Image (cartoon, rainbow, N blue to C red; front, side, top):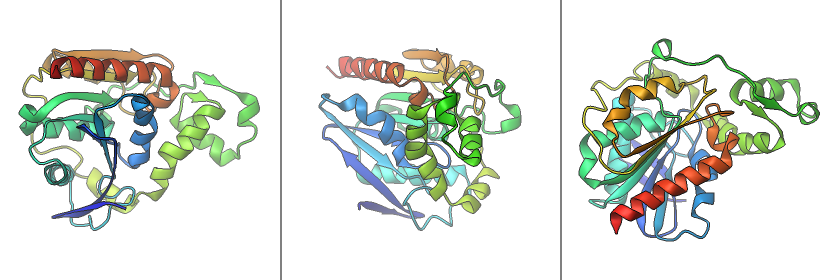
Length: 272
């Protein structure tokens, strides 16, 4: 199992493929399996990309992180990891939820190295009370399948997904819930006390191909707040997907794959 020792953490990571690096940043509580589950199908038959999946401090198999106190230091840890793993290499960023917030922090000082960026249900406003979010709604469900779950499983499923069927349950439990169950909740609660960066992000335009994927029914981070930063991404495809909550990569898997693939096509077009 590969680990990367940095100042304030020993970061677990997995590398798949060769070529131009893509740093994959999952959200708050899950682990690298969330990103691996949705991103790897995109590279079936697609060569030339080195996918780097890491577990953020306090999540997954990463260890020795307890001296990290806030999101600034989480960001420092990720930047130090990137500098150690792919020093001075051009690369891409894909960030989901909190990983999307970290990605925008990375971009603040790494514009010249970045070939593109993609955001999956990105966290735009760290403070929950200031977000614009819709009410949580279940859009589709399979009552026969739901009857096979325990009441606790059913309640958890309904609280986190807007499509409730066997396919979504299987992916939600293996890609999202499995990581959440491993997370260090005490540590994460500490980080949430200083969830906001101490500096502003989205202050300069990013002119490379980018992608924003937002769930119309995302009751965690919403979709409307992302409009506030859209003008800073002149090369962005900005898609708001219906029948999609905070795990849209599962609930709209085909659209997700198609839009991510098209983003990579645009990046390849720029690379020549």
